[in-house]
Every structure is written in structure tokens, then in C-alpha cells.
Length: 225
Length: 225
Image (cartoon, rainbow over all chains, first blue to last red; front, side, top):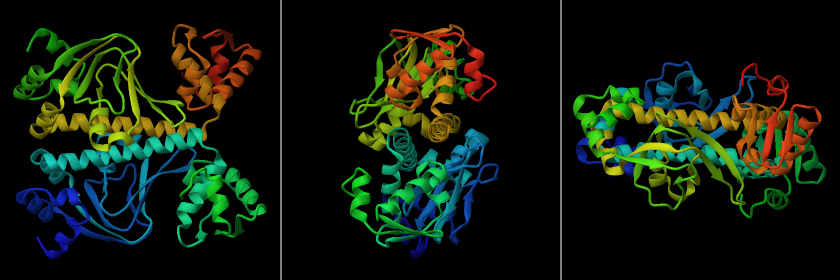
């Protein structure tokens, strides 16, 4: 509809290729949303009838086990669609996933009825949605491989490097780090202390500073982050 | 089309509710397949353009990590559709999943083009397909929780009971059991020997006999199988 809508579709190259009528429908039926960091955008039992297109910012998707332990499943960045809505409508409560914004997020919400309407009309839109499903399955399979077969030390080192990125210093609790790698807080604390003894990190309350990225990279078993 | 087709649709209640024209299309375009046990029905790099509806029998879906270690992801029984085809077409090689028949399987194959045609025409068919995606995401999330947070002993005990079902005796290698619970063969062997010492199982070459299901059930941390 507007220039703003054109801009956000640039984040979704697959949607920019939709025929004019379908693009019009998408622009017309979506509602822009500006979400502050820390907003829960999806949770089980929540009546959520819209599909969220992430234009900018980042959303963390995680599950809780029955003892309330969290495991991070994947993150959605610009150009992603949150498919939890479909899954929640169809798999109901058994799909115990949560989604929360980690940064301010600019999104567009498409109501469920319009979503299904577009799915029916548009083979390209179907491809886009199924590709999103495929990406998320790939994400979950990666988590499974990692938790089943990589050592805690390697997972922890890799995640510290990814999360720290260029900053070297992380504001994060040991509990949160445990959720990142699918482990328990005590286990993470023990390994962090061992990293500190080796001079790879320095630890303060809710804060971890990376002192030796090269050693962490070696421990992560990877040549990159 | 035929009585045979009517019979198999009875396995798929959601599809039996399709309008007449869509049911006709489905019957007309699907090809029956009788697959012996041990047939690979899906693997990465394989040009697989059809969607498989399982009418009877069981298919095991697993992934391999880069060292060739296997992890069982889920099983498809009667009434299931194998969604790997969509994912492979869209996520390509990164979706390293395999599917193999564990028993003789009677299936119906729907070519990709007809699948997409039905998706476009039929809201009910879309619901059916998205519900299958949702089920598989739930399966993968269950594997993640189990591998991250349940002890090897508990996962092994639970899986022995599930696999043995009414038979008490299992023909299975330690390697295969490791794949079932996402662990390593040596770890499984060690725990099986410990189970044997406690009188819960007896071990022979490629064979495990359940001697004390109640203790296994207790170790599995569950009141059922």
C-alpha cells in the first residue's frame, strides 16, 4: 500500500516476487507492530490468531520442560515468519513453545484467516511458508545433534563466542546460558569456572567477559564462531 | 476411485471429510505402493518428488550427524503423511533426514504437483498438512527435552519398555539402542550391563530380554511405558 509496506517487503524477497494482486492483499491485511524488547509474542494457551512477519530485530523461541527448565530452540531475525501460530492452532497445548523479543522488533501481523486465504491463492506464498517450516525443522534437528553429541565444553565455548560477537562482554546469567545450550545451571557454572581458571573468560555477577577467543574457538571444535 | 481407495482414506479421517471433488482428485492422483521392511523411502540428495501417505506399517525417521552417528527422530504409523518431501525440496541438503520402513508398509504416493494443487484448492487439505508439520515439530521438541534433561538410565529404561511392548525380548544392537535415545554405543552398553547386574534384563548377542519391567518402569521415571 504505502512506501513503508514496500520497504518491509524488501526484507522478504520471496514475497516481493508475489503477483501484484497477492502483494496488494498482503499489504492491505497486515497490521504493523512495534514491540519493545522483552515482549512475549507467543505462549501456549494464548489465543494468538495472527502470523508475525519480523521486519527488524530478533525474537527468541524456546521451550520449557515440566520442571520449568528452558531450552532455546532458535531465533527469528529480519525476513522470518513466526510459524508457531499454525502449530499452536493445530497441535494445541502439546506445542509448549514461547517466543519473546530480544531487541525492539518491528513486525507485521497477518490475521489467520487472511493467512489461509493467501495460502489458498498463492503457490509462491505456500512455498514461502513451507520454506519457513523447513528452516525451523532444520534448526530443531541441529539442536538435537548438538545436545546429543557435542560436549558441554564445546557447546558452551561456541555459544559464548556467538553471543559475545564483537562485544567481548556478555550480560547473561548462568541460568540463561544453560538454556542456550540445553544444560543445567550447575553444569554451566562448573564449566565457566574452569574456563576462568584457564584464563579464557573472566566472571562477574551476570556478566562474562571473553579474554581468549582463540582458545574458546578451539574448544568449540570449530574454526569460526 | 475404488473400494481400496475408500479403505485407505478411512485411515485418514481428516481426508475422508474432504469435499467429493477433492477426494476424487486425491484418489485419482495417488499411486499405491507396497514397500518391504527395510526400504529407504527418503534420503538426502535423493530426487523424491512424491508425498507418502502411510496406510499401514511403520516408518522410522532419523538423522545422521557428520560422524555418521544416528539419532531416531520419530516414527510414522498408519494415518501419517511423510512431510520430508516438502522440507527436502525447500531446505535442500541441510535437512539430513532419512526414512526407512521398519515393517512392510502399504502407502499411497501423491506427486508433488498434485500435492501443491490440492493445497491450493482445499483448506481442509491444508489443515491436514499443517497438522502433520505441527506433530513433527512436537516430536522434535520432545526429543530435545529428553536428550537435554533426562538421564541416560531413564531414557534407556523407557525406550526398552516401549520397544519391547508385549514381547519381552528385543532383537536390537547396542548401536541401534544408542540411536534410539541419542547417545553413544559405549554409554548404552555400560548402562545395559548395569541393568543386567540388577536383574532387570538379560543380554545376549543382538538380543535383550526384559526380566523386570516394573524396575525398568520405575527407572524410566514414569508410571506407564
